[in-house]
Amino acid sequence: MHSFWIIFKQAFMTKAKTKSFIITTVIVAAAFFLMANLPNIIEAFQGSEEEENVLHVMDESGDLTEALQQQLQAAGSDMQAMPTDLTEEELKEGITDGSIEAYLVLEQNEQLSARYVSESANEMNSGADIEQAVQSLQTALTAETMGLDAAEVSQLFQPAAFEREAVSESSKSQEELSQARGLVYILIMLIYIAVIYYPNMIAMEVANEKSSRVMEILISSVSPVKHMFAKIAGIGTLGILQMLVFGLSGYVAIKTAGTDLSEGAFSVFGFSDVKISTFLFAVLFFLLGYFLYAVLAALLGSLVSRTEDVQQLMLPMMFLIIIASFIAFSGIGVPEAGFVTVSSFIPFFAPLVMFLRVGMLDIPLWEPLLSIAIMLATIGILGWFGARVYRGGVLMYGSSQSLKDIRKAIRLGENK
Image (tube, rainbow, N blue to C red; front, side):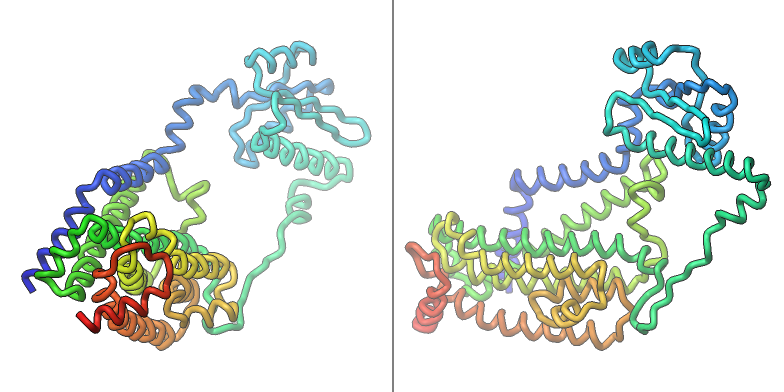
C-alpha cells in the first residue's frame, strides 16, 4: 500500500506543479471575477452616460416630446427626451463628430410617425426602447381621440391570465425549471470538461512515462494494476481540488461583485431554492463519470509509446463524450424526450444525461440509482479488463495506433 501512495503523490504533485495546470487554474478563476465585474468595467470605459442618455427630439407640434418622455419613464427607460431647436443637418453633424448619440423626428398627421436617426444601425437597444415608447404614445393618442380615459385604455391592454400546467408527474413547474436550468447547464459543462480533460491527462502521463522508459523502472517495484489505479486516484484528486477552486472563485466573485448579478443576463441562471440532492448527484455523477473514462483512458494510454499517438487512439472515447454532451444539451429543452430517457441508462452517457434528468425532472429515485448501479458495474468490468490490458500494454513499445493492439497487450500481460 505504501507504493500506491507514493505513485498517488507523484501523479498529484507532478501535474499540480506544471505551468499549464497553474496557468489554467489562475486564468479560469480570474475569468469568474472578470465576468462578475463586467458591467462595472464596461461602465468605466464608457465614462459618463449623461450625454448618451439624451435623445434630441424634433417636434414641430411642441406637445409630443413631453408625452414621449412620460412613456419612456413608464417603460423604465433612463433615456431623456429633450426638444431641440437644431436643424436636421446640424443634428447629423453632431452625430458625425460624436457630440450627439441619436435624434428622433416626430410628426403627427392622421397618425403618429417617427424617424430614429443614429450613427450605426447596430444600436438596437436604445432604438427598441424608443420604438416601444412611440408605439405606446400612438396608443395613448388614439385612445384620446376615441374618448377613452386612462382606466379604459389600461383595461383594454391588460394581458390575459395564462398559466402552464403539465400532466406528467415527473414534470416540474415553469418556475422550478427556470431555477434548475442554469445550475444544470453549468454543472453539465463542468462534468463534460472534467471527463475530457482529466482522463486525457492520465493517458498522456502514462504515454510519457513509457516514452521516457521510466515505466520500466516503476513496474519492476510496483504492479502495473496498482500503478494504474494510483494514477487514476492521484489525478482524480487533483481534478476535484481544481473544481473546488473554480467553484469557490465563482462564489466569491458573485458575492463580492459591485453589481446585482440577479438581473440581466445572469437572471437565466436561477440558483435559488435548488435542492441539495441536485448538488449531491452532481458530485456523484462527476466522480463516476471521471472514473469510468479515466480507466478507459489509462487502458488506451498504455497501448502507445509516444505522446504523439495518444490523441489518435483517444478518438473513440472523445466521440462518446461528445455524443453524450449533444444529448444532454439538446435535452435541456426537452428533458422528458424518449431519447434522453433511454440514453440516461447507457453508462457512457449517464454522467451527463441522467444528471440532466435529475436536475430538470422529478423522477423516481430508483431511476438514478439504477443508472448509478449500471455505471458502477461498468466501471468494475472496465477496471478488470483495463487492468489486464494495462498489465501488458505498459510493456509494449513501438508504433501503436490501433485498438487491435488490445489483444496483443492482454496476451503479453498473461505471459508476464
